[in-house]
Length: 155
Image 1: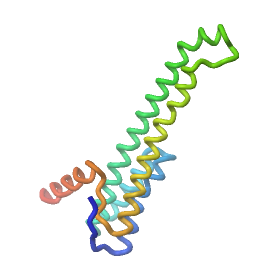
Image 2: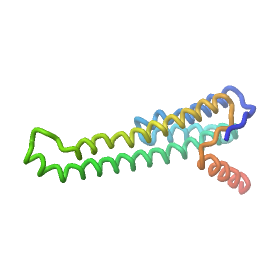
Image 3: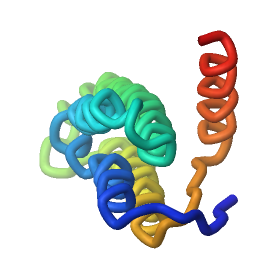
């Protein structure tokens, strides 16, 4: 759900950077979440728009890092599990690799596709916030909004 908001150019840039920091997560795991959290911490008292976008980007990227890690662990487990039945086959026919090896190798595509889709969605959020829209990640956006509203009501 996106709606047009009135926000300054600086607010749109900061909100966009918080979402675009998903690119940092590709190389550092939690680095993008840390960058988004820094934007949130420095802007939470200055701009509700930036604070919301940065906080949801932080949550999105933390969840993404956990999903990536889990996906790679599953792939690694499957890959090594494909080696165990191959050992007797390699002893019998050392010149060819059994099909199970190639299935294990090509299953690497699954975590890569997850990472690619996750990154593109984060970049979509960066584009939408740069346009000044109230971008919300599916599920995460509404959860963060409710959390922010309840903490404001309590404080």
